[in-house]
Image (spheres, rainbow, N blue to C red):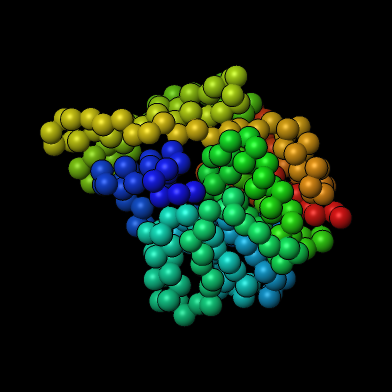
Length: 260
């Protein structure tokens, strides 16, 4: 992706940051609560190679590296990666972080596990989203596993609304809707200056919310099988013991294995 033609997600991130949204806080507390699920789902063993696609500020990558895994974090945002590098340096961790568009991933049979979490999947076109699955499948070792977090389209189609979050002198109002024709969650974000009362609309954000049959069909094309789907508790933390509830779970966690 060229610098003169940024995708909507890159532009939205820059706009939010300029308006005071705090991306500099690394939420390790919530990441720790997700860590056991990630380890067990991927069936990781000490020394395994793990790829964190869309790693952001490194909240999962750093904790996984501390547990003795060989972690490679990939993200397009230089500023978020700098945060991750600083934190990894403080902890004296051997953590490889790459500033890279995940659509350029080109590796073969290197990883025991791959994670795509925190809204990093579904932000591209359908063909590009499928290409990411293809590239990940190629990068996985035989028997390696992919864990993907994705919006639950069945839930999002019936639960649309508005929420507000205060950051510094700004209030960010998020209006969520569901585009039935595109199968996408649509976020419209308005930034309100709490001092002047002025408001600014942030780029609309789109997240493709695939149905389970859609994801299964795409994955099977690239030798990813044995699909399992997990839900989350009331605090949105995933657990292997929690079956996916199509009516209650806002997001779903899909686990796939490279079978040949």
